[in-house]
Every structure is written in structure tokens, then in C-alpha cells.
Length: 367
Image 1 (cartoon, one colour):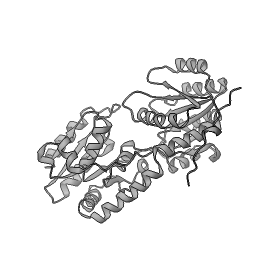
Image 2: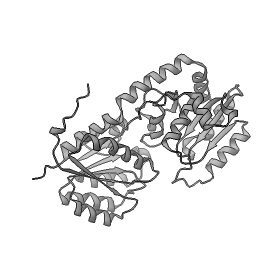
Image 3: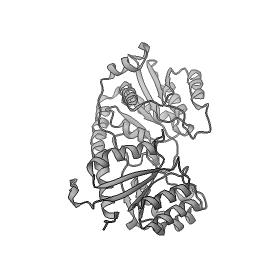
Image 4: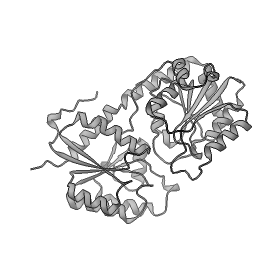
């Protein structure tokens, strides 16, 4: 049973510096925005300030941290923000010089067999400067340990699921879709689009099904870091070749629009191919949509419950899974029930309270 944290037990005036990309369309920026939205009302005795790495150089960041004098430096780590080089070490070292404790949320981790050869040295150098490594999944714990991190310095704080919704399907379709899609069986893929998301594999799977009333919804903009800016166009052309009807909205849609698109769906699919250990915010939103969800059995969805998993790179297995969920209501309802339970286990409030406990443990009382 989850124990409520008494605000009286939390050290006063703990200053937390959040080092992250922020105020962008990046999933990590959205992760931090949601975290602060829940943490701050629950814990008003802690002061939070975001240091945006998309606006500051490492030198500027260190200078501002020295001026702020935080008790805890909480880094949202992603390799595209902090490549393997000495500047990240300099940041952590400067933070320790201030007297702060360093906590790192690892958003992506690589298995040893697929990692950069310099990564072992990287972890060996930074580990003495890190007070707590935060793993988003239980698999991430194993990976951190494989890099030589002691288990006592690792804490599992899951990525949160969104609050449950259950918007009426046909009302949503009338709001979001042209009339010709109102009575179709709709399969949804969503999120930032890039080749590793496997959209063409979903097209292959749908083309194998005998029901001509099935259509694909592809909702999401091209991935901002993708080198293939024409990926969405190529998906549309591929769907035409495979005689699969596809509806596309290639904008960066709002939270409200995405919730409505998910409500339009009969099945939501995340056909990611082999990926490093991470989590998908879009998938955790999907399991809260009261719609059945299919994912690949990859590290991206390692701890995700209430979904039907298929092997990556198998359009036939994906086609079979889509068919099951379109026509087997009992299975679909069971997945939704399991997903609802899981979403409650990893709600934003529960995850926020885990962070509050962390700040209490590692924060330094002033005076």
C-alpha cells in the first residue's frame, strides 16, 4: 500500500535544479513539465528551477548552478544532449563542488553488446560523482549494473502513465475525421515518426488482413532528430502500393487532439523495431485511452502491462494480433482492464511522490 508523504516530514527550502531540455516538443521536456506539474503542488517546501540545456552551454549552465547553489541537481539524461565527452563530467564535478547531490534519470541506456566502446570508461569516470542513478524500467537496472554501477546507487522510478480517459468513439470520429472514416475499423500509429517506429510494417500487416473496411491512422510529425525528412511521404506512398487506406495528420498535435485521435481508434499499435532501453510516453498515454494496445516485445516496452506484445519485424504476427483485438471483444476488454490497473500503479501522482521522497533523502537542510 502506498504511504502518503507528510509535508511536515520534508526538509524545508530544498533547492532542486532540474537540468533538462525544456519548453520544446521533445518527449523529455514534456516528461519534466508533467513531473513538475504534479510535484510542486504536493511539496511546496521545495523550490524547483529548470536549467534548459537547449538554451545554455555547459559553461553557462555551470555558472548559473554556482549562482543558484542547489541542494539537488536532477539531470534528465539523453545522449543527444550529453554525448560521451568530458563536458558532462565537468558539469557533475562542478555540481559536487557546490555541495549538491547529483541524481541522473537515464532516459536511454544501451546494452554492452551494442554500445559505443568508450561507454564503459564514461560510466567509470562519472559514477563517483553521481549519488543516485534512476532507472525507468527494471531492465535499465540490469543495464546500469552491467556498466559497473552498484545496485545500492540505483533506484527504479517508473515512467508514469496518464490519467484514464474513455471518450466516446463515434463522437471523437465526428470531431477529428472525415465522414468516410466514421464507420471504418481504425488502427492507429502515433508519436514522432521515424523509421524505427515501423510504420511500414503496420502497413504490411494491414495488407494481410482480408477485411477491406480496415484503415490506418498515422498521427504525428516527423521526428525532430530524424535524418529522413521524407519518411512520412514514403509511408504514404508505401500504403498506396499496398492498397491500404491511410489517414495522416502530420502536425505536432496537442494533448487534447491526441486523446481524441486515440478515442477514434479500435486498436493502437506501437511497432517499434529493436531499440535501446527506454520508455515511450505515447504508449503510456495509449494504455490510459481505454483502447486495446499492441506493442513489439522490445526494451522500449519492457515493463509495460496491459498490452499485447508481438515480436519485432514480423508483419504476420502483427496482423494476427490486430485481427484478434478487432474481433475478440473478451481479449480486448481484458487488456483494457489490465492496462487500467497498471495506469493506476504508475500514475503521475505516485511517481511525483517517489521524486519527493528522493528530494527529501538527498536534499540538504539549510541552516
